[in-house]
Length: 114
View 1: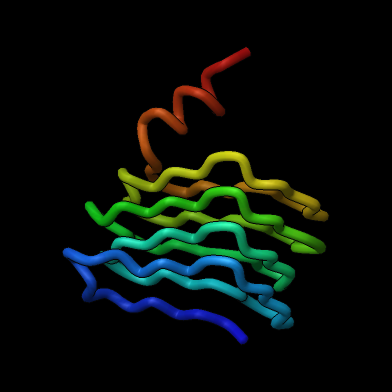
View 2: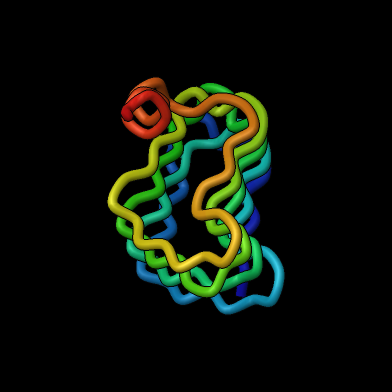
């Protein structure tokens, strides 16, 4: 089973909680402006979860277990309210890959500390 969220949900929040994803490719895809909460899931796809151009939508990825992924969490383009906290990673190439923007607090905590 996999989840794809396409652009459109601007006021409510998609809540994806307590699932086990075991696809062979991409388990969770957020594509476009959406609000979503990815919480307490086990994610094992080659590419675990991805967010593309979330815009001003709030995206929270918290307390998930990413197992046997090549790249666990991929964030592409403008995702200024994308947050991720307290996830467990067991990835072979990259735990988190960002090519664009994420929440300012994430950027300051993870990329500017020495």
